[in-house]
Length: 110
Length: 127
Image 1 (tube, rainbow over the protein chains, first blue to last red):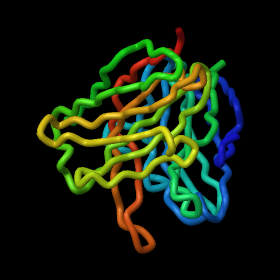
Image 2 (cartoon, chains in turn red, green):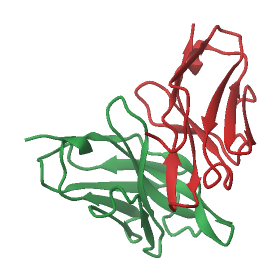
Image 3 (cartoon, rainbow over the protein chains, first blue to last red):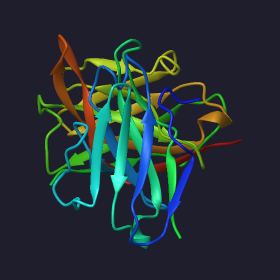
């Protein structure tokens, strides 16, 4: 069981918007910055969002991140079939002094 | 552009030691801004952070694996390595290496984000 809780799956139609939640605690998301990673089938994870809401170079602005209290949210607009992937949140746990990932959310674009 | 590449045996026998190396190109493990980390992913499961090393040799490990893990860095070869002892079938996973941004936060340095990642190396534990 992961320290960060994500829904196992979400789905939406092409062109629509979807959000993926990541719930933590005061010692994880409540105290530290969150990053998001996406993992296309059969490939390595890739950084998608860092510092809660910043996008690395090359990541389209269809992807956004936010944080409030002990939860973070990844938003994806204008869904494309190529967005089908597993999405993971991650942050530092200041209480356990470990890095933690969420359990991952599988996005299906119907 | 920094790239990372894992290498090592794809099959390890139970009770033996898993050893992997990550070769860094396009950048230096001597960079003071980054940690160098290992993460694993059992088939069909989530990511699990294993630990990281700093170029000075400072390490930090996941407590769940700490008694069996060693991560070391070889600055002369621009590589860092993972050693996991006494493996069982539960250690079967894809093992990724990654560069980790290091940042000063609330009084000490902590990992900030992971980028880039290596392509991953599947290690199967089986006799």
